[in-house]
Image 1 (cartoon, rainbow, N blue to C red):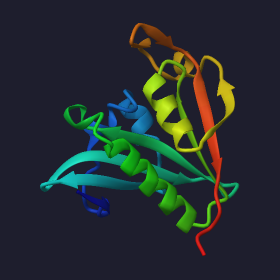
Image 2 (cartoon, helix red, strand yellow; image 1 turned 180 degrees about the horizontal axis):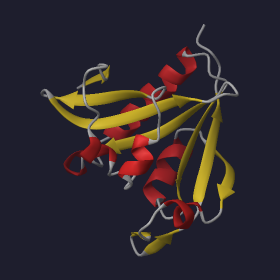
Image 3 (cartoon, rainbow, N blue to C red; image 1 turned 180 degrees about the vertical axis):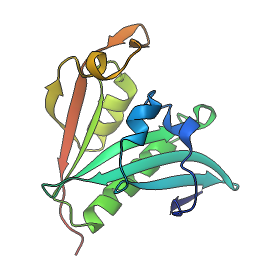
Length: 154
């Protein structure tokens, strides 16, 4: 297993990223300052995450996705730990991540890693996504934003 930063001339693994954010337009809107890392196993990309610096000194985890065949094996935790180290090394004061109210597995993953709920953007997904989103029978309407204060690595 190798986690590496995506080279500037490499295409981001869009199909994989769509697992975490089903809107290609939203993914394209991450911007040129967003940085992408991939998880490779036997030369095949099976995971991805994206960090974007924020103007106030924080950093946002924009996307974290694991190929469906490899989910439930700890790869998401590995990528999240790597993202935390990268965010800390960048001298960001905090790391924030938003996920859907219906994303029970993601809410578990982030809280288990030490994130705390910060706020809820009500109707975020109904306003920003053309198609209704449903996960495990739960309508995805609100964006739950979780935050972790960071300490720069010594």
